[in-house]
Every structure is written in C-alpha cells, then in structure tokens.
Image 1 (cartoon, helix red, strand yellow):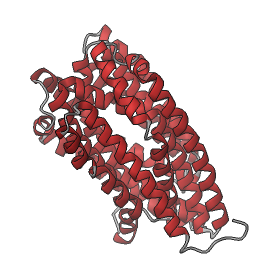
Image 2 (cartoon, one colour; image 1 turned 30 degrees about the vertical axis):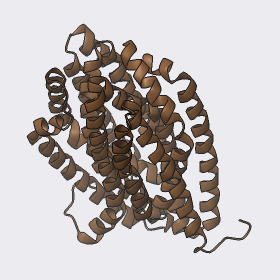
Image 3 (tube, helix red, strand yellow; image 1 turned 180 degrees about the vertical axis):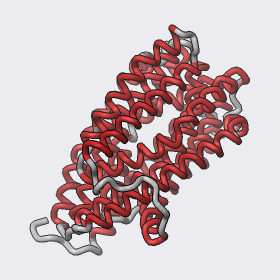
Length: 424
C-alpha cells in the first residue's frame, strides 16, 4: 500500500507544480501520462509474471525454478523497455495527434514525451524487480526505495519547473532523474545486500519453457491494462472534442486524484496475489479464502469512504492541484460522478488479485476489457443526449459499476466448482 501511495505521489507532485503554471501544461503532461500508462501496462507483463511464478515456486519449495523465472523476467523486461521507448520515439507526433489538442499543448507534450523516454528501459527493469520483492514477501524494500525517489522528485520539481524556468521539460527531467536514482539504489540493494536467489543473472539466453509460463501469466494482465490505456486515449479525445484542454485536464488529473482509492486497493491486491499464490501452490485453500475475505472487507470500506469524500469534497480536492476555477469546477463534477462507482471498483480490483494468485488471469482480464470498452457506446449515447462532459464521466462510472458486479458473479461461479475447505 505504501508503495502504491508513493507511485501516486509522484504524479501528484508533477501535477501540483504544473498546475501553478497553467491548465494547458497540466493537459500536456496528462496527455503523455496515458502513454506512460501504456508503458507501465506493458511492464506489468514481467512484474505480474514475476509475482505469480516466483511466489508459486517458493510455495512449492522449488528455489531453482524461482531463480530461473527471476532471470528470465529481468531479461524480458529490459528488452521490452528498449522496444517500447523506440516505438514511442518514432511515432510521438502521431500519438499526440490522437488527442486533437491545441498546437501549444501538443508542443509541450512532445517535449515531455521525448525526455521521459530516456528512462523507459530502467523503469521496466525496476517494475519487474518490484514484482520479485513482492513475490518473496519483502515489499518493504520497494517502499523504502521509492520513498527516496519521491523525496528527490519533490525537491527537483519546484527547482526545475519554476526556479530554473524549464516548465514542462523540468517536470520530465525531475521524473527521469528520480527514476535513475531509484533504480541504482534498487540494483545495489539486490546485488550487494539481499542477494536473492544466489545473485541470479539479470541477462540470460531465453528458454521457451520459462518464457511461455511468464507470458501465459503476464500477457492477459498487460493486455488488459494496455487496452484500458488505449480506451483512455479515446475517452480523452472525446473529452477534448467537448471541453477542449479543460476536458483533457479534468480527465487526466481527475484520474490521478481518483488513484487515492484504486491505487491503495492495488497495494492490497498485490499482497493478496502473493499470499494466494504461495498458499494455492501449497494446497492451503482455507488460507486463500480467508485472505480474500479480509482484503475485500478492507477495500470495500476504503471504497465507501473514498466515494463519500469525492462526492462531497471533490471540487475542493481538485482545486489543490489545479487552482483555475473553470478547471476545478469541472474536476469536482468528475470526482462526484466517479465517487458513486468506488465500491464496485474495489470489488473488481480485489477479485482480480485472487484470480492472479491462482494463476487464472484470463477471466478477470476478459471482464475488465469488455466492461471498459462498453464505455464507447455509452459515451456516444450520452453525448447524443446532449450531456456534454458529464456524459463522458457517467460512461466511465457506470462501466466501473458493471465490472465490479461481473467480477463478484464470476467468483461465485468459480467457487461452486472448487472444493470447499472445512469450516468455510
């Protein structure tokens, strides 16, 4: 959970300082944040692959197997990082054009993208290493390391954005420098202090038997998140067509603020995935279901409190990041509408963690992809009714409600077909 909060704080820091420049700067960085989201989604392939394969290997008492998975995940992550950075660099202009933003917003977004691409390969490796530490149950290491990176980013942002006068470019350099420092600390910790799996090699010749297992586990998760991010581009384009840069700033910044709940839930889900993976492989089904019930109880409470906060205090919360009245008024409406779906979102995310730990990542991916893409006909319908930007926000909120219900129903269906441990 702490690590998830730190990831969220990175975005908060950038948005808060850029919000003091203009809503157009926020929109520029928000535009690129979706493509960074796609990159992180692709990185989730090896992160989730490491979490599940390594935790299950540990649970089954197969340390050599865990070592092979660690080496293969690190090799794949580095290769993916270079490929994604090259692709985004070659097609940067075309990708930003998907939003149809104003020319000055486009120019700032292009600068931000080119600079942040420099950190992609090491970001991909770091993401995989986070998954490795989560798999062995040492989640405090990523927390401490990211905490140092956050502190550095909080110092660099105002210095580079405002004092040096670099604006959006300053925010990008602050992010890249922080990522590099975090990765160097992380690699030192792994190599010289923890020495996990007897100093496993970070680059190896790939063997299909290990690659296939990693791809089988990680690809549905990565595909789910990439398709979700691609949908976010479409929704951002619709928001831009209705509300200009204010619509884009509201959607991207509102999504970052909404991370207060779903990012916290992702932290719980990561822990749940590890606990379920180890106990599932060990045949301890009673502990699997106990862990899920406790995690679900926590996240539903979080969703209820977060939803109430967004509904009643969303506008004031948004104004802390972007103080322009037009922007935070629109942001308050976004958070109010999204507040109604928070409980359902928590149910979906937590149930995903249970399925991932079991090694069954396909079913929750199908539910999430289908529910997310339901937003397209919904937003077109609501816009045809003349709802404007609120129609975009309602399409997002209603689809989240349906996904949460579908995730719980799929779990009930699966539970009836599994052995029921005594006492549960």
